[in-house]
Length: 345
Image 1 (cartoon, helix red, strand yellow):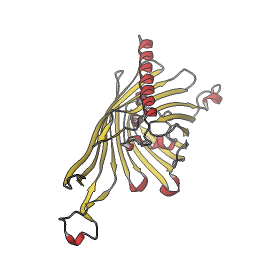
Image 2 (spheres, one colour):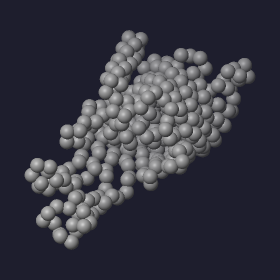
Image 3 (cartoon, one colour):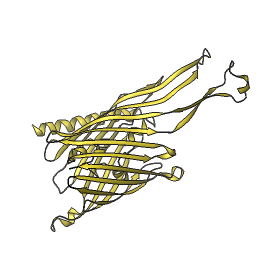
Image 4 (cartoon, one colour):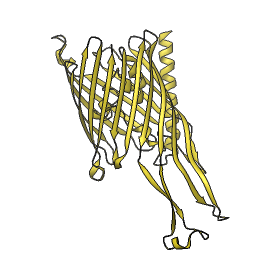
């Protein structure tokens, strides 16, 4: 029965992802809406070049491959902030807890802070004549709202196979504006808001060779959204990853080591760009100090990543702090991330 469940789930996941991305490939628009759903929340993942198999058993796994959350032991509450490009901030919060053999349950939220914008509309006859030369009417400042709230679940199906899923409600509100009807010339108040239900699925498989693991995920699966007569897709992404502590190849005869050197590689097929490759390397000492680096291939701006982490545990409780740096080209400079976690064992 377990083999049947395993085979059926993998078949459904691969067919769903392949069919959706085949359609996306046929109608690729060169961009997708709600792009904030693609941004890595966890500093550990970001420092490893965006590889999703490099770290497992953390609450932030629900943003990348939810199946990796199934390896969590106890509880994990993680909050993070990303200093994104153009003075944009991303805030993320993830909390997960294991309920015995039933599985791991989690909740999460992501929110973007774009600051304030100034709203204008073209000058019309009937407006203040003194503003005619200016050509527009200032309507004050407004703010953009982008957020996603979700619940997650993951569990171990067999000794080697893990599954997980994430369901999110995503909202984008670009604020209300005044537009001019091209036929009547009337000024119309319009609201620019869309929302979607977004699904993420993931699997992890350990074939039994040391800690070698394979993972696959489909992220941001959703219906199309519309602004007036303009329809756009969400950033659907299919991800295949592999990771392993390569020191196991040399320490097998000597027994356990206090160091780990994890090599991770992800092949990424996004809806809105060509195929990409993510490479990450993490050195961990005594499961306390972590040094990370990575590289993103086939990106216009992103390239090198790096970072570090520190984890301390005492009497069933622990704290973890992670930092990530990402190069973002000459124009945007860099992206910095910090995440802080409270651990319950």
